[in-house]
Length: 153
Length: 153
Length: 153
Length: 153
Image (cartoon, rainbow over all chains, first blue to last red):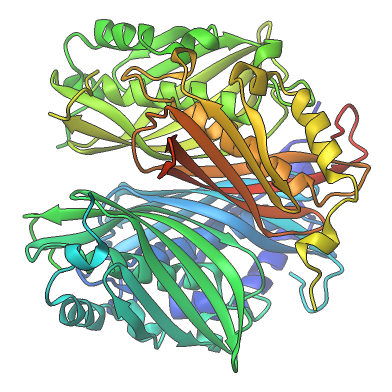
């Protein structure tokens, strides 16, 4: 019987994710915050800002990707051993609706954990008060890397 | 015989791309510049900066995506009629090597123009002096939108 | 308030899907059957067979794709008007586990209906008695085409 | 300086690819043949047949994928050590034009070789006499697997 995500989780996953997140210059640029944090599940939240837009004033597809990729990466990272770093191999994103905001919640969820390869799904929601609208979906493949120079966390 | 990209190009494609590019808050945040500009071909260039990094100090995969998506979008836009806006439907990116910089050149190229759907390929290169190294590839599907409220260029 | 999938469905969606499915030589080659059939939701079922394998004896990733792409395409087709044909623009598939069978259930689900563009998600399950195991996920973009010569259904 | 694809190639890559290809039931079903075979480069060729079609009589997108995935997998396999098996992690395909035939040439090309992860690009061409037309592009990530039970070649 396969292990559950809770059984696979690093005992200090929350501190490890928070520590790595604080090192991402890109997350500061997005003024992004960590939201939900559980084994195999990480949310990242941010607000609409003119510095993140494309030409029509919506959040740029690449900025949606930046937040979703980090959410997926950290979801995978919660399950990785102490000496492993997480790297994105590839992702694909579908843009479903204009990213108007005013706020956004980006979900990363592990759907297949693995020793070397972890597969995640991401979903981006525009948030307006208590209303949420799905604006993008992501499929993301991450790799666990051990012992590569200058790459940890 | 199908039209060439030059025959398909909008007569004022260069001004139109430059005008739309200047409206992207995200391009200012990346401190990105337009490079090569030809029918169906747009390059975007930028420098490594700490505000664009993931936790190991490389350019964040999402920031690579932001520049590549704009390069692909504007490559498609060079071929679109005056009243059309360009929107990204989806893209997929493969990260091939760490994005160390110090500079980057992001190529967007139309491989299949169309009235509604245009398909582009993107390639990201790390640039060090005269040396270029392929760091990422993108496949991107764009849509031409006419007459949608608040969406032009 | 957006319309529900049931409100969007063609009144004769079941007959239309069945009719088009019967025209796919590929579905005969897979010996595939239509399963669940609802507005925006289509399942396709098939059995493991040596004629569909890769070199290790698992169902070939491309054959998994063939069934998932049809499931997604028909899920989208349930919502399309009488004079429209459905075409795949692109899909991406992640292979999560070896496709051993002995049976398979391939789910196609509309996550974003649209007049021109419909986005679907697919999931492939290996089925052994009452046990199901997720073996692949797909993200798929479909287009509704009207009035193109020789393309209907 | 990185090794060239020729330096990376297994000394008996041609026999190894041919041997594995002959084990794929799916390639027999497509009546597919190996074409070009070089380090990091494999072509697969086939003819249009009613057993491989979607509802409009074109080659099914999944069948295009089946041939492209095998071409990419074998391109990667030419560079792998004797005890390694090749598995597809994921691929994405864009369909650019109807796959009418009468013949097809599917190219798989390694763009980034690696010990664990290899990234390939695939291109599908419809062939009519001496004319070739690009009908699909693929981005594909493959994994080299060593010592997994029941998986070799």
